[in-house]
Picture 1 (tube, rainbow, N blue to C red):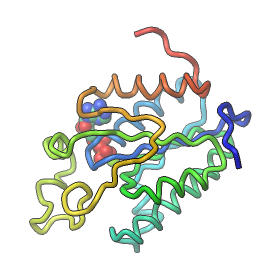
Picture 2: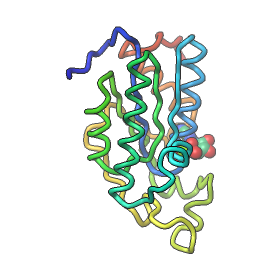
Picture 3: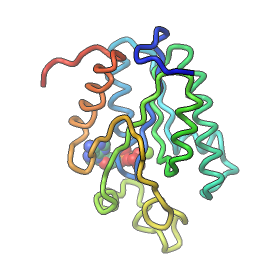
Length: 188
Ligand SMILES: Nc1ncnc2c1ncn2[C@@H]1O[C@H](COP(=O)(O)OP(=O)(O)O)[C@@H](O)[C@H]1O
Ligand SMILES: [Mg+2]
């Protein structure tokens, strides 16, 4: 189904991907707050949280990660087709999952890659994952001992290693405004 640039129902999916600690949760939260302030219906599907609920039996093999992404993309589709602005915040390490999510969306779908060098992510390490990776901590940490395939066709790339949170949120909101999904921002 062709994806319209300006969907009349108003729902859309922003699929935010990147390494652990690239800023997905933080950015989704900041942008969600702003969109709610504009009176929109917004939902955030955050990888860690939905994994516990949707996929507790799944691990971190390629097959399991792809299965989890499929579940999340299905719920994103249901919400978006009911007019909700859906922000997905998930590592999404595989190109196959990104393409499948786009194909399944049925609504406007925007893939946003938070590009952040692994060294910067490691220095942030908000959840202590990098510190313990390979030392009895989480096995298969993306970017350390599990792959993150460089996105081939993201709609937007935000360099969260270089920009701060406010700048990154502004970049995404500007992009959504360009697509006529949100009101234009006041000049910075
Ligand atoms: N440009 C940015 N965008 C988002 N987060 C950033 C940015 N710069 C620094 N940070 C910080 O990086 C950390 C990212 O953590 P988090 O959002 O939990 O990442 P993720 O959900 O990708 O694992 C937070 O402490 C956040 O304040
Ligand atoms: Mg997160």
